[in-house]
Length: 206
Image (cartoon, rainbow, N blue to C red; front, side):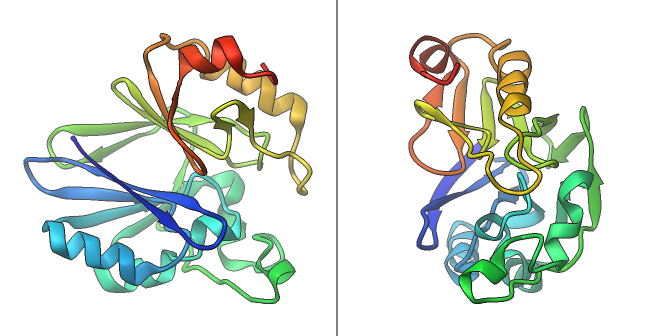
C-alpha cells in the first residue's frame, strides 16, 4: 500500500496520500491547504488521485479541496453529515479566520459501512464517529485507521464547536475504535501516529 503524509497549513494538518501500488491510484485524505505541494508530490511519485476524502468539514481539513480537484479531477467524498460545510464559510468556520473557504460540493456522500475502493488492492471502510463534528469519519484499511480529528496520541478531538458532543465522541471512540486489536495503527489529523493499544492504556480521556 502507498502511504505518504504531508503536514499542511499553519495548524499542522496531516494530509495523507494512500493508494494502490499496482495502479498508482490514490486517495488524498484531508488536503487542508497548499494544494500545489500536494499536487507536486503526486506528480513526482507518478500517482493519480482518484478521490479527495475529507474526514470532516472543518476549514483546516478542506482548504485544499478546490486546488487538488482542479489539478487532478479527483472526486470529493465526505460524510453526509458534514456535506454542507464544504460550500458554506460559516459552517466550515473559515469566516472565523477572516477568510471564505468554499470547496466544490461533494461528488459522493458517505455513510457508515461504505467501502471506498482504490485501484486493485486498497479498500477503505468508512466508520462514522460523530462528536468532533456531526459527519466525522474514520477510514480503516487492514491494520491502519485514519482517524481524522476523532482521536489523537494521548488526547481526543475538541467538541466545543457547533455540532460537537464530548459524550458522543467518547462513546464512538470506545465502541468503534477500541474494539480493534492493540497493534492497529491510528493516523490522526494532527500530530504523531499512535496505536489502539497505546490509547487504550494511556489516553486520559478514555
